[in-house]
Structures are given as structure tokens and as C-alpha cells.
Length: 144
Image (tube, rainbow, N blue to C red; front, side, top):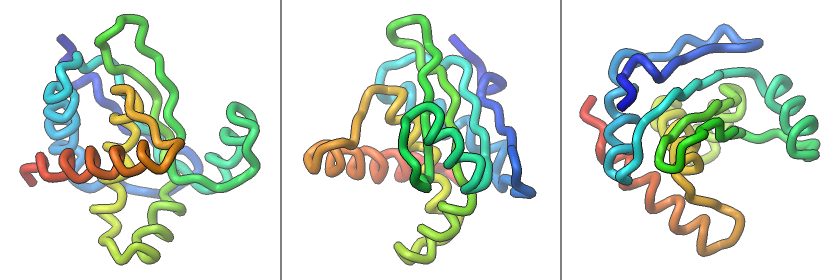
């Protein structure tokens, strides 16, 4: 099984500084284990709108801003591994729009990426409703 050291935080084109970086891996691992999956190598890359829009165009053929793009990298069936790109600019805007704190909005998006790696989708209204429910459940597992 992977250790907490297999969850990494990076940044691209942003001066963002992650708060609670020492506590987040425990929570993320707890969520993965609740879904009876094995944590693998997980990379969070915090970036600008511009950086993420370039990835969105290149890999998904979408020319829009987004808050998150998740890439699966696991080679084993029940292993959760991937690269999760998060636009700090978009998270900041969405926190204001949805009347959330920046920290809560960021953690919602972070766990949203994990839920995608676990297998949850959000294309249809029913899937979006289930995803939101799983995000809320996962956020309740925080102990900080």
C-alpha cells in the first residue's frame, strides 16, 4: 500500500501556497480507503487559468476555463493514481460565486479529482448529483 508520501503538491504559473499541506494527505488517503481502493501516486498541480486552459485545449479539445482536469495514471485495477490539475484562479472565483471560503472550495475541488480517479463521473444531472453527495461526504471526513 502507498504511504502518505505518495501524495505530492506542485505548482505551475502561480505563486499559490497550499495551507494544511501536511494534513491533506491523511484526509485524501482516508477518502480513498473508504471506497475500498488503494492509494497510489497522486500529484496535485496547482496552476493558473491560462495554464489549465492550454491543457483543456490540448487534451480535451475544449477552449474554456475549468477548475480541474484529472488524468488517470494507475496501471492496477484498484489503485488510485493520477495527476490532478487545479486552477487556483478558477477556485478563487468559484469560492466567491458559491459563497464558500477559498479553503473549502479548494478542498472540494481536490476531492472531486480523487472521486474521478475512483470512478465517479459528472456528465449527466444524476451523476452530478451523486458527485456532489460524494464530495459532501468526503469533506465531512476532514479532521482539521
